[in-house]
Image 1: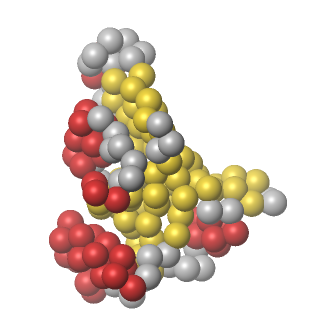
Image 2 (image 1 turned 90 degrees about the horizontal axis):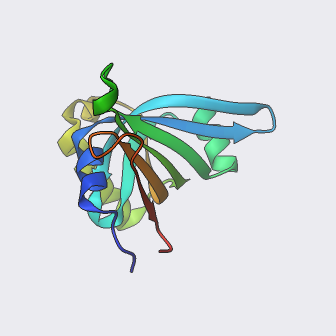
Length: 144
């Protein structure tokens, strides 16, 4: 069993709904933006994406991915955001059912889409929160 990130990190992730996913391949790096649902008890992000997209093809081959979730603001004192590392996978069986239910609860329109559901198991999170102090970092590691 692992410890969940502290409440400020969890609250930030829950409050937002778009992540930027960074992947790599022999040809370089790539970024994609995806709507996500956070599954707190698993500390994972669930999102949908077609299996033939560049970011998914790269993540299948190299499942360790990076990403970010940010608050868009022009006020320096309000800057908040997280950078993360995680392992991408395609959920199966009971986990698929649970993740799908949670994703559709957040994005009911997805019932009309023919796409694939993915999970991103978070392994490292660094949150910057200038509301606490300029440049304040909160760090969480799955192994800690």
